[in-house]
Length: 252
Image (cartoon, rainbow, N blue to C red):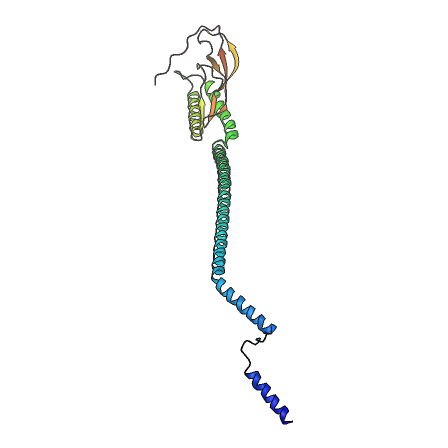
């Protein structure tokens, strides 16, 4: 038993004194994996600065491309707006021209309406009594005919005839003055050149005292109302066979 104990002690001592070239223990798989990850991390740590520069460059290029695209889009939008604005401006100018033309036409029409209304009012004011004036001039003509049938004044005439003549003449003058104040005037036609605007020829006769185309006799005078013909003069006109001379022009 003591011999066995000494043998074990000797073996342990021999083991401690064994040469250092003995086989080293093999590392475990976990230890190999840790060393591999450490090496990979170390390699990645050495490559990281280069990767950051590449990423920065790519980011800068992407940002520049995005800025260019944004600029192109803005320019396109601005060009579209400018084109739309030009079209809109042309449309507005055309609309303004159309409205101006319509306004001018409307204004001209309104001016015509105003002028027509003013003319109608003026005519109504001036010629409202046209029918009455046409009737009253018949009275004046009757006075003229009555006066024409009174014998001319002469010596030894009956005083009553003289007073009758004076009464007719006074009444005729008063009536003509009243008519004149209301724009009614009488135009004598006898001896005047025939004027179809105010004369109505009832007959043509030869005359040795009147030139051809002159009024030989007036049955009625011409009457005017504010420059408008109220009644034409009914006249007898000298024909082309007449040998008379035209009347001398009146001195101014």
